[in-house]
Image (cartoon, rainbow over all chains, first blue to last red):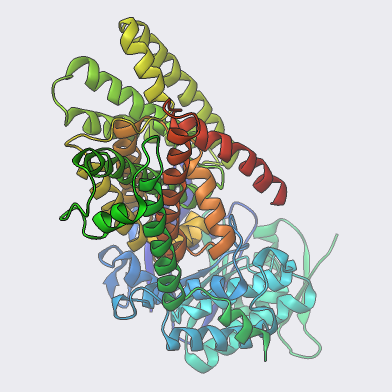
Length: 258
Length: 343
């Protein structure tokens, strides 16, 4: 379990995250929504120790995050970035095996064990990348590459997933598949996930809890029904919206009214 | 057979790495043997091989002059060539992975020039202290590396373009320092110094020979131990950090060790260019870009490359010699153009 209390993060004089408290519970998918510059990514980056907060505390399993080594954090928390960093050519399998970094040790002379390979195989299968595993990452389509990014994050077997706009470059069907995978993982293996997204309806469909942020502050945190109400959304996004129920799933559906 | 199994089969494994390194080591032994037979003075082949295989404990019918040529002149020079080549290729491969830039190379980054300035200052001010040269060369290499790295780091981080530009700035600045110091020297020293700057292995027979050899071996081992972190760093620092790489510690280790490798080889032989560029590229083309195999293979490959280049340098217009740096650049530049066109 990951818990942040009274978190404040500043870039120089600008306050990016302003006194935010939140927690990620096992089996729960939390979505963070809010306009550009609301501090969503900054919040996410602080949760795995990439950014040091100016004040406030972050606890991982009731112990301060700062007390953990880099490796120990990486075993517990994994990040799915918006895009893969790829400055040298690698195959999909090599890329995904990168997720096993913290698990490989001197007993196998720094090489991946059979178990590491099995984990890689299973996440490749789950992300429907099995047939592409010997292809080069830079030859894949945007959607395939983003699935590989998720596959690598899943290969770490970390129980806490932080996803930073993972669907920004994906088409409609792949957005749903990717988040569906995360959802299923959290249901079956009781992992917790934090998903930053600009797609309010996608958040409504896959998240249990929504964190609505504006100018570094959490305006409202709660279930989709509690957060996705016209007044709050108008306040945060400065646009009039119509909220009704999705005809099939029944979750709130948000439509901007111009 | 599914494609995923196939991807697995093409993957670099410990077994494949060991076999590759074994093959390269056998090649190295053969090349060392062959190179020690070649030179302006013809040595009897079977007697020399006999003496070499007994590591000089028996003379095997060689005259004492021949024995001395073999063990006092040629072998030290070949071993130095191996150490210099291994050091530069290892440093090049590591810089390329760390800086995420396939064009990073000790010579192009100004690291070699930094080491050269350090060596020159040691010669000028502590001429009598032999140890001051590798130490000052290491300091010079380290300062140049950090200067290039700082200059290259813009608001968006160090892009490959900025890095090369920073390297050019530091290289040209240090070149003018070298010219300035050279003009302060007397005429006879200038010639030998110019030769040394181009990369010259003729100063091999010194008591310091074990230093570059030990540095090359230890450096290659330390960098290979960091190869898995480098594999992730090579793709991107942010992702490497997220996956558990201690980015700061690894970066410092690589900078220190690579500077040490460049410093020790420049102090011993001047700036032998292109080794750190060409050898890692050829290595990646033939064994792939997993640093666990690339780095140690580049070490042995670099040793092979410089031994061969130096053998050409001292035989092609024998009894006169060419600086080995001229040969590596002659082989390296066209090869690099060819590599660039393939990419």
